[in-house]
Length: 329
Image (cartoon, rainbow, N blue to C red; front, side, top):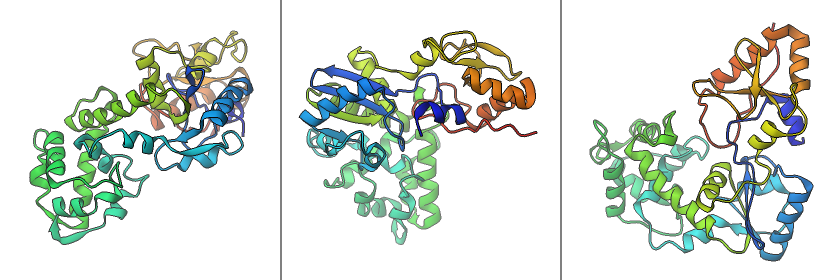
């Protein structure tokens, strides 16, 4: 399904999507991808990316799981850019243990870690480090794990002390869950907690490494693309916010797609929301017309409210969340 067909069905526009490409040089490009989706680039930009990839190689993120979604677009993958990055890092700096508490459900972390009540949580996590470590081919010490737990501890949550509990399934689940909630709260982008600040140290190092590359095509998550743009002061080619806010067609009032409020009223262009507004709901002229035909402004208002319930954080970065526009009477 093409990007705009998908958007018509679900409404996929967030205020800053990080979907597009940054050409660092004639021989290096960083491409933002919504995980689990094909690259959303125009034929012209995709051709430029493919030329760089064919000449200098392409690298995907993490465990390379997203490569299958870009089959036919990129056919010259050489591996994971995280593996290249890992080669540039000496040892295992403690901030990179944040992966223990990141995307826990998606990575099946708890299942992989398992339980061992005869050991403490600390010793069990140390023995199972390869299943969650950012550097699975490197071994970190007990001192590194201790330093990580000290760094993420905050207030009543002393992870050093908590890690002394027996490594039962329930204890490990609670331990990881508390860490994940502290690391990734609803306002995680402001990094209010120590755990988030530690994770940011690791992700910042990866972003800085990406920004320094001189050869190759690097396919990255959308959040990385936004940070590389900030670090290099280079524009994102085909940034969706710019297209839908300033495009030549698509909106009822000209330009890009339009923004609607909880009353079903058109209040502006997508990407131009005002301070204090809730999560934006952006619709093309045709999609708004279809909803209006089914239930008037009430149908559009229903779609806006559903979006705000299921995806409330206006400042959330990363891939857009699929929120259906289907009208229910």
